Image (cartoon, rainbow, N blue to C red):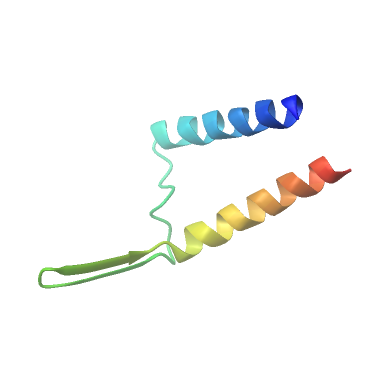
Length: 64
């Protein structure tokens, strides 16, 4: 359990570092953003897919 928490913490820290360096995480091509008048709608479709793939790979490594 302890090793898993350390790895998750390091992953969050790495993600934070990437955001600080200017990687457009959360604004990827494929994210849906609609603005009409005073209404705006944002759905991070591509970001969700990328996160899902990364988490799937990470969890597959831990199951071994």
